[in-house]
Length: 241
Image (cartoon, rainbow, N blue to C red):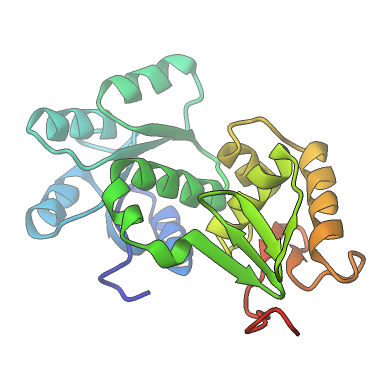
């Protein structure tokens, strides 16, 4: 993916360490990232560049994030925004959404969950872009091919049966092939329909259908202490091995 194809994110936060961490992590997750340390600096960035998404800290010195987003939205800006705050009160979340934000996360948070939420929001906001990437609708790994649109798994010419939960879980991995997904991140992507131990069990069931030896997986791998990743680099050309 070239830099022109990567979604451009503006991260606005007065915490230097957090800005650096998010910039480094989101770059690894195939985002193009620009940062700003204040609302004033963010306005300068917005004057000179186009962004696909804003990540905005609520509590900043001077103009706070809520006021910044509210003003930008009232001025006609349509760029989606995700708010960050250290405050966990439900009322703060409502204030953020009322200001025009598309989503809201409370610090501390898992960076991978942020990346997943950004992708989900961008997917909702840019359906045409998704339609143009037909090659991403089918993912191949080893002798398997998974059709994302139809949620159909083929092994060679054989159709494999998947339960609804297995289809949903494999869709998450296939849409984010090569990216480590944690239990928490998967739970967010699945709308809370699976979490914790139930995700572990579903991963084990998938491995029994995907792996030559489920005890030593080569496609759906474990990233120790982080989660799992679907590896697609070991693809066969024709399913014959």
